[in-house]
Image (cartoon, rainbow, N blue to C red; front, side, top):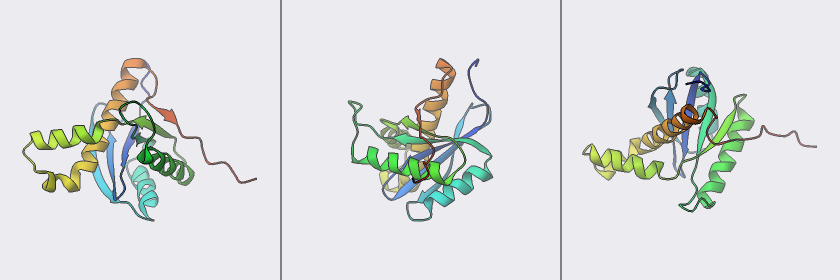
Length: 157
């Protein structure tokens, strides 16, 4: 636990239609689902509001690389979303490798007996839980924050 930074973090799983949100306790013991936010013009504002409501110190946005660790169209979308979030929030934003988080979420829901259709509304939250829990575990085992920081927005010249 030597290098773990205390504080609530939000895990954010960015999808084309929905954004899953999870949070952890200040000691980073457990990630839990928060809500699924519709992906629209208000989603960034809603995430900033959730961060404030939960007293978050950092936002962890999932970065969907392919299995070889390469960028995809979804990766670019997640980077753009994280940059917009960093510009709108005073909090640090980190991009965290989320390969397989959605796959893991679907598997966990299937194992719990839920059908794909009945899981649709919560799979994004579960994927956010998986990516946040992974980021917490990485930081606890290495003493370094998971992922890479999103630079704060630069003022136009």
